[in-house]
Amino acid sequence: IPMPLIRLENLSWPAVAALDRARTLLLLPVSPIEEHGPHLPLGVDVWVAEYFSMQLANRYAEEHPDWNVVVLPSLVLGSNAFTAPGTICVRPTAMRDVIYDTGASLARHGFRYLFLASGHGAFGHLIALEEAAHGIERRYGMKMVSLSSTLIPEVLSGRLWHRVEERLGRALSDAERAMLKGDTHGGLLETSFMLKLRPELVGGNYGQLAPFDPPLLTRLQTDFAMRQGRAGYVGYPAAASVEFGEAALAAFVEVAYERM
Image (cartoon, rainbow, N blue to C red; front, top):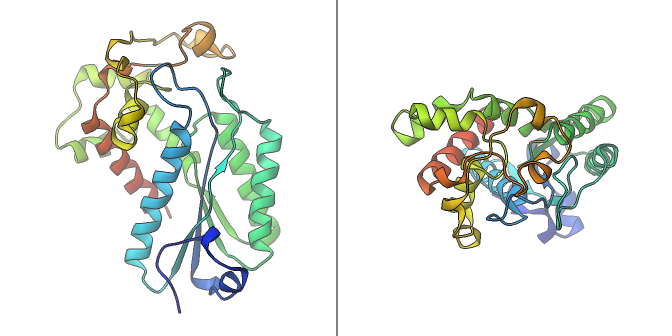
């Protein structure tokens, strides 16, 4: 009998074996532990990935009651992160191999649909996810999709702000749009995410943090957020709000769901 949203780790192996492979959707959150400035906890990317996975899973289970929707335990893993005390980073090749082996373990037992959700937007990290997914599809024929690999670049390029405006019920101001162009790590966007998801872990000093929006040449330097900014964030954390975090999360989940 198909079940609604379930957690893989809560099942026995016979229960997993009994799942109808043609009607079972798997979701895997995957993100690193990484510094996000002096005001945010190290788990930002993991919590965002888990939130996306659970929101997508719940919606799919609600709209497809004849399917099993299974969320896997998070892989706390990532590459190309800013180096700071607490950040845990692996090589992109190691990242690719672990994701590939995870997909292969599921594909060998007949699963057909696996979606990855990442809260970490470093291009090396996203490329590793893409390489693993394409490798699994070629070898096993399982549909394995990194939902974040196209979504995150679209967010950073500003192509999805109209979806956020729809959720806000208002247009973004010129000042907000200007800030968001350079806001890439622990700034307005991610601080707003955390004000929505884990407000108790957001440092009370975020409203006093000065903008750090360096030019492109600075951004091309290794660990520039720690070496040049000296604080580990990039953007405008003082402009963050619960309102913006709620609207942005809802809009981005909606876009991701449309692509599943």
